[in-house]
Image 1 (cartoon, rainbow, N blue to C red):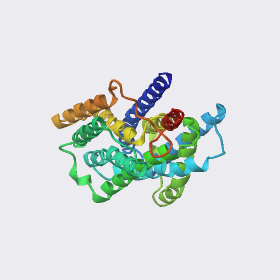
Image 2 (image 1 turned 60 degrees about the vertical axis):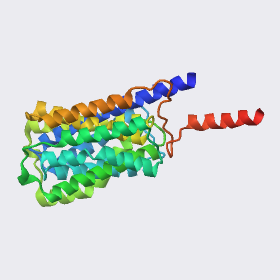
Image 3 (image 1 turned 45 degrees about the vertical axis):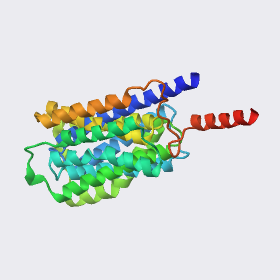
Image 4 (image 1 turned 180 degrees about the vertical axis):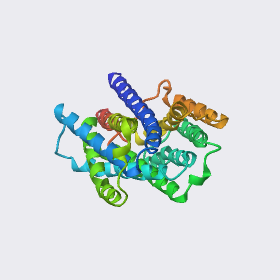
Length: 328
C-alpha cells in the first residue's frame, strides 16, 4: 500500500508539472508572436536561447546542482528543444498565419504519442485512447481561426512550423528515454546550452546578412523578449521534472493544454475573439484532460520507466512475484 501511495504521489506531481509546463508554453507562443512584431526571428531566437542558457547555468551552479559529468547527452537533446524547435518555430511564425501555425502545432501531442508507442513501446488504456481522440479533435478546433489573413499563409512558413513540431515530439520521447540523473535543473541547464550552441551558426549568418533590430526594440520590445525567456526557463524545468514521472504518451496528451492557454492569451494580449468552434474545442480539450486525470478506482497510476515505459517498481514487483511462486 505504501508503494502504491508513493507511485500515486509521484505520478500526480509529474502530471501537475507537465500541465504547468504546457500552460507556460502556450503563453510563450503568443508572447513570441508579439515579440516578432518588433524584432527579427533571429533576434528573438538569440535572446530566448542565450538568456535561458545563462539563467539556468548560473542558477544550477549557485545551487550546487550543475554537474559536468554526463552533460553531453542533455546537450545533444537540447539541439531538438530549444535548438531546432525554437529556430523553426520562430521562422515559421514570422512567415505563416496564426491559424495555420497553431493548427500545425496542435499536431504535436499526436506525434508525441505515436512516437512513444512505436519507439518506447508504451501502451494506451482504452480511457487514455478516448481522451487522446477527444483532445486532438478539440486541439484542431481551437487552432482553427476563421478569418485569418491568407496572404501570409505561405508554404515555407507551414513547413518550418511542421519541422518545429517534429523536433518537439522527438524531444519528448528523447527526454523520456535518456534523461539521466533526474535533476530537472541540471538537465534543463545543459539542454539550453546545447540548444544555444546548435543555433549559433544560424544566428551569425543571419545577423551578418540582415542585421538586427534589437537595438531599436525599445523597452516594450525587450520586456516581451525577456518574458519569452522566463517562460522558456520555467517551462523547461517543469517539463524535465514531469517527464521523469510520467510516460511519454501521457505527457504528449497533457500537452493538449497548450493551444487552450494560447487561445486565452491571444484574447488577453492580442484582442482576438475566439469563434464558437474554438470555444467548443477548448471545452473538448478540458474534458479530455479531466477524463485523463480522473483516477479510476482500483487502478494503478501510469508507470514511467527508463525504457519501454516499464518502471523499476513494476520490475521489482514482477521479480517478487516470481520469487514467491518459486518458494510456494
